[in-house]
Length: 232
Image (cartoon, rainbow, N blue to C red; front, side, top):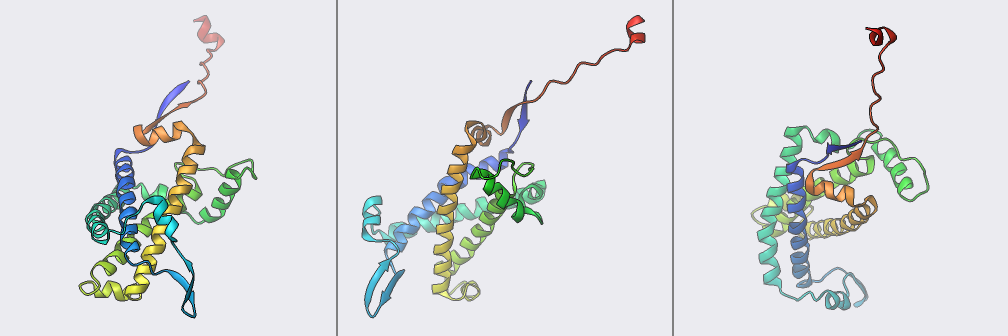
């Protein structure tokens, strides 16, 4: 018997789909800014042996060296990114959704079992509710990363006005490194997330759009009457 099961709320779906294009623009505009000062290299005795993003990377993605354009987009959409994140965190707290999201004491152990199951090394996946242990850790980590991006971004954006944030981040240059590492974390999460969506199938993907999922549940057995009830 097919039944409709509510899976994702409207608020969660709204924040999810709004955040995806915003974060994509943030990463793209961040690359425009970074190319204006491409400093992360490995150099020894005045010779550069390794650059984090070689020239062919910029050429392949056709990333122009437009520093002003990148800063304009980055500093505009960072407010949308922050607002969307604040609304999502408030929603999880007020609605109680955080109970399904925050990792539990045994989540890290179960996440390893989830990984073994995804790699087809382990047959049985550990029991889960709305999210499994790996999803709890990943989604909570993304929220923490978002907070870190906002803090380090403000420290880089206004190092004089927000000098206390710059100091908290270990200085301007270290804040820039943390901001850069967090961006790489988003890209890594995107890749893993998309792969997991493909493996989960269309039904799981469509539930993030519609908010519900059609599931097959076994039919309830018919109530059998006793002999006395039949006789009467």
